[in-house]
Image (tube, rainbow, N blue to C red; front, side, top):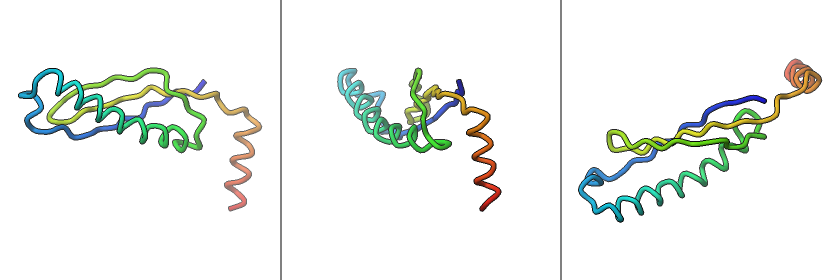
Amino acid sequence: MEYGFLIQTCDLPADIDSLPAQEKTQLVAQRMAESAELLQKSVRSFDEGGWAVVSHNVIQMDGSLILSFLIKRERKSVEDLLDDVREAVRH
């Protein structure tokens, strides 16, 4: 297996700490849902794709939401790696 990390950030309103808990929760959930779309694209395209999310972490810091995702995929075989090298040499 190969492992990697994807990190995404999204801005939060400056007054988020003054919002009622329910509004704050809804806002954070909305930002995370928006990030999910970007995550799907990133997982498909990052380093030739094939990745799956294993776990995640969410941190609120300095007016931003920081989302980190641990990703994994099957390691390429030696033959696949050699094919990549051959392809790169041809170009």
